[in-house]
Amino acid sequence: MSITTKPGGILIGGTGDQNEDPTLHGLFLELEEYQEFPKTCKKCHLPKPERAHHCSVCKRCVLRFDHHCPWIANCVGHYNHRYFLLFMTYLTIACAYFATLGWQPFLQSLEFDYEWEWWMPRPYVALTFLLAVSIGVALGGMCLWHYYLVVSAQTTVEFYNNRYAKSEARRRGEVFVNPYSLGAVNNLKQFFNVGRNYKYPIYTIFLPIPIPPSGNGKVWEKNVTQRYSTVQVDEYSEDEE
Ligand SMILES: [Zn+2]
Ligand SMILES: [Zn+2]
Picture (cartoon, rainbow, N blue to C red):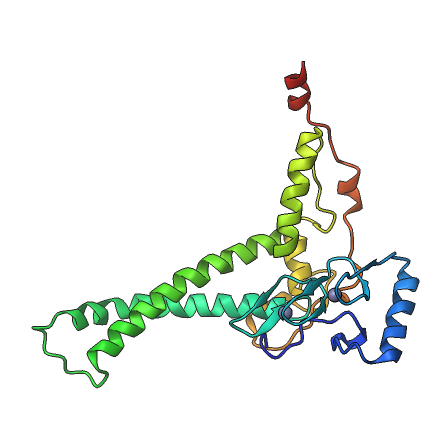
């Protein structure tokens, strides 16, 4: 699903086919309706909804763009980020399972005075074990990183922008607030589109079925309560004295 699902172009239906004039018209109507003044992409010169970014590999703007993944030869964006994260989760679990059960056979495969009586040749066992461990560690790290991003309601692109905004805010003695963060639990629910206020029951996370993300990826709910709770940090004003 993460490979075959289109990450979400900015035109209606998420096909990203910019030659379709009626859908381009539709996009303008939609943006007008939401009264969101769009930025214009400097590369494809189309209106750019919030959280969308231009992918230089796919040469088009992608909704809630995270990154372009060469391993799945696809962008990770609004419509397939869920599948991408679940894919990494399943693969990490599978690698951990294999590495645990494969530890003893791996040790045996290295003992050359041990008589190898199995059908599978020794080097295969050793190599598969090493692959499972190395891929499991690399993917596991990336997987945890993406759970952190989901819980804090950021994409990889936004993480770097927010980090800069955070340091700028700190310099001015203010606190940066991510407007898309609805709280850790709600961020998770929104991302997986499950639970209360969302479309699907929680157990569907464990089912290998296609589930679309919540929302159209063009307009995003903002955390209004947090916007007004921005507080001044006075530890920096003390430094100025
Ligand atoms: Zn673009
Ligand atoms: Zn891409």
